[in-house]
Image 1 (cartoon, one colour):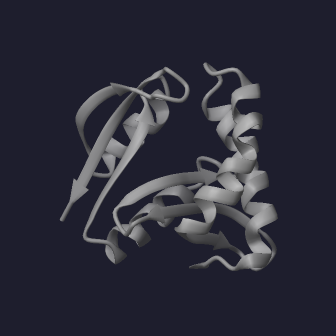
Image 2: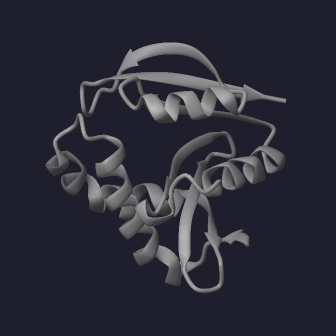
Length: 142
């Protein structure tokens, strides 16, 4: 089931974020992500509309939307990846929001392919100012 997150979900969401982001971005030193944990938790999560995939036993993934237009995060617990949960979360938000964009690291090839298959287009390549790695800006519109 996909539902809007609530305050008691934050610890599990952040556990999934940390574990999954380190795995997905193994080309970036994991200390970078650990150093940004509190920023994500205390600055980005409060300004995001976050939806979780919850099977009533546990939260297995989440997606966060900023300003009704930007996908700030889409992460699935490493134990449940490749089961279609990411697709379900993305499909859900694509129905809820008119135009969505996101930034994805160029070296995160699996994610780039996933978003292209879901109808996103690469509109720009740039350097991420925090990590200094190349990223794509991708857009989807109905």
